[in-house]
Image (cartoon, rainbow, N blue to C red; front, side, top):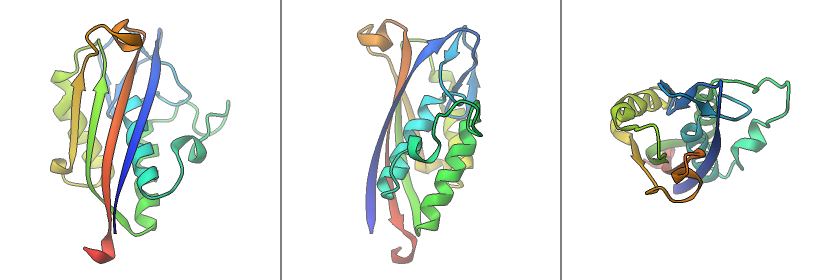
Length: 162
């Protein structure tokens, strides 16, 4: 069986935080606010994977409760756990197509590094992970430089039916 999942996440900018996107540290004057490291791209990807496998959402599995084990956690750890969850159900990743919406910083120089990092964490070929970046032409909260949004679509398949 082949299944498709879609994920979306958004975080607002926050001073005195590092900016983590796609598992890598991006040079920036500010980071994103969140319970974990606020990697909006990995969070959208996790939600897409969980949804495709009928495993609810990231908040269900990793609740943002003050003082719990997920506070300030590296989102790559969450993605690794999500991959284990879908594999435990017999699924494997076919591909992931992700889009990050950010007016700033410019993400083009970091795309290949993000793709490589995500593929490594997900234990899949780099060809199976696409990351794209766009602006919103100064429209909405992203355009006003208040935060970053990310979207992810994934295809997973049952390993026994390959």
